[in-house]
Image 1 (cartoon, rainbow, N blue to C red):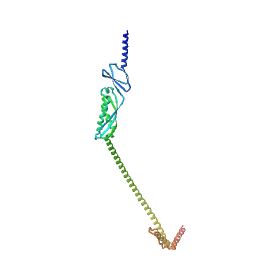
Image 2 (image 1 turned 90 degrees about the vertical axis):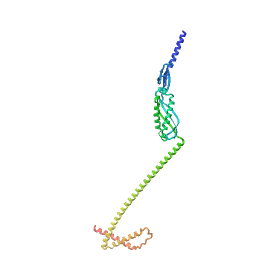
Image 3 (image 1 turned 120 degrees about the vertical axis):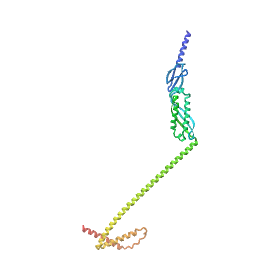
Image 4 (image 1 turned 180 degrees about the horizontal axis):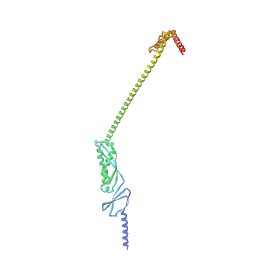
Length: 309
């Protein structure tokens, strides 16, 4: 009886152990493969699962979340024989746990070596200038090549980023001198264009000023001619009046005519540029008489106008 109880207790303990071995809990973001006698049978997704103890066992435990893999620095020789050091990062995600577990050995090491090899291939086919200026193009080419190569492994490569491209020190110095020379060249060109534009503007300004000055002189000459014409008309009218008075025997008209010519001659002598001392054979009585004649002439003219009115 005691032996039977021991056997039952053994069975109970064995059952508990088998249940414990058969219950499997898979955390979120992970997937486990199940092998039966060493052969893959199925994949356990996140949650609680049961397997056949002893017969089945867990195989690979695959991380299904996106993973970042650092690409170590390596030397790359470009198409124009410049040596640069390059490093980067790879983002990948396992989509099929079974393929990732059984199609390739050491998945991360395989992806890393594949990426480093293709970095040398892609960047080695470019010139240094193209390498430094087209990083997005390099990333896109690497992503296409590496993703295609890892698809049979059940892996999706989401991004490949080149972090740093470091040319040799002497090459960096040469590039700095080249950049400085280019900027000085652009500055000289801009300065020359500025001087050219300024010269054009000055010439146009001088042209406009000359045109305006000529137009001003033409306007002044026209007005001066018009003034001389009006003056000539006035003088002609006055001369006609004086001639009529002389014809009528008015002595004051003769005095007015002589006094007018006399005063004009004196004005011309006094207004000469190089004339500092003017000798005037002036007879004051004659001038006063002439002015008196003018007054008499004006008085007679007003009297005649009054009679006519």
